[in-house]
Amino acid sequence: MKRIYVNEDRCIGCHLCEWECAFANSGLDKMFKLKGRFGSEFVPRIQVEGGEKSDINFAVNCRHCTGAVCVQSCIAGALSKTDEGMVVIDREKCVGCFTCVLVCPFGAIMPAADGKAAQKCMLCTDNSVGEPNCVKYCPNDAIVYEER
Image (tube, rainbow, N blue to C red; front, side, top):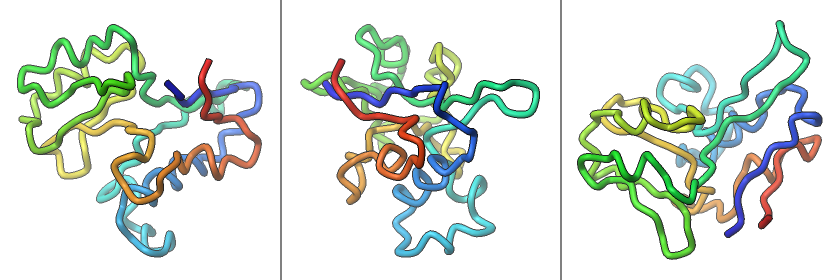
């Protein structure tokens, strides 16, 4: 299965991947419409960590783990694995207990902006983009989408 991998030695912490992610999952037709709504109404499913106190920046996203503890701990059955191995979330089934947020060892699952369900990276398969926007628009190829 293809996954997103981060080359932290190339990441400059520009946060463009966060903006592209929020835009790809917003349903909006222009990115400027995110202004004032980014982080409140539209929360990116990828988060850049690092910065001022560190020379290292890296993007945190779902790793679609083989033995995904988030899937095992979901009391509502909202998290599951596809036949291809991708961990997906069904927002309709999610009861908002956020156990998955607590158990994810990478901090890649977070509450959605509405606070009613969890959200995570689903490789842009749940929107009309078709390929991960964070990968497509990373200016330094710090984020790649490949099979290893």
